[in-house]
Image (cartoon, rainbow, N blue to C red; front, side):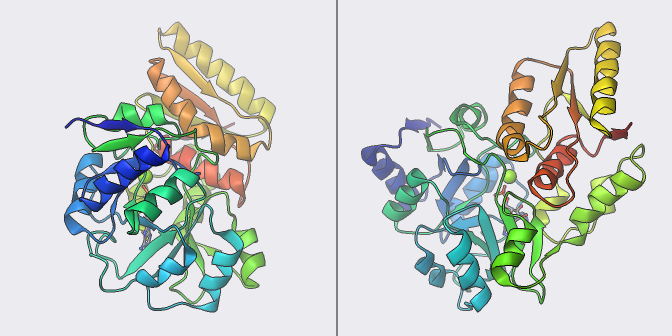
Length: 343
Ligand code: AMP
Ligand code: MG
């Protein structure tokens, strides 16, 4: 398939919108990561997204809208909580899981009776959804299992020849995927951490917000028995996306956790050891507590190191138990396959 490479000009977005209306696939920038979009109401188009990504079909997609009021096309059940989160965080990196209308194909939601909805904070994305005139279902625009794409060149590397068009926009401002919060249970529950934290959701809602147990479970196992690591099969994931191999670089990856000086020393030691064995080693070590910057850079760093052909990536763990650093650690541990040592 020939992939059109488009700009964010109005003319090009109009071409992309036409492709969406005709049942095609368009990769587009958002503030979180690039998305691979299809008409959310078109079952065949959505099936092609799964195919292009090589994504398991029970992993639901997030549906993107351009106006908050369009949420009525996706659900009949608006609650004061939903309205309050819209007022506080949209457009922005917050996905709400809510009861879906029967008109949304099961394929879009991976067979669930709920739908994840968000309004992105990116002009090209908003223009595309507006001009297409339909909600756009979009997972991240990478091959399933590889690091999420935060730059147009990452999307092109994964999807050129597999999708109808790629809109080349700016690098993504946030760099990790949206916070996913499930509003269908008694207590709002975070299924995927992001830069909108539990604390800020609690402030907006005036009530307690929990993390899904499998999220804390992952970091708890690691903290309790870091040398063993944990395997993904140890969790009973509620959000289907949690159970798959995720974000993995081609290189082997190891996370080193501990006091900053100890981590730096251990990484130096392991690096030297591996280089002596003839391995090319890449290091990811963020500035202390620079969590927003870490979120912005993490996936891009994985991809750059793969492009440099490193055999091994050594990454310093971020110490943060529930904020933005926790969201980055969620990705870091998954990309390393929960391969972690404590020093
Ligand atoms: P991606 O678009 O690749 O970031 O993946 C979207 C993720 O959002 C999925 O893997 C799920 O973890 C989550 N998600 C989307 N819709 C739902 C839903 N209805 N229920 C639970 N999780 C959802
Ligand atoms: Mg993804």
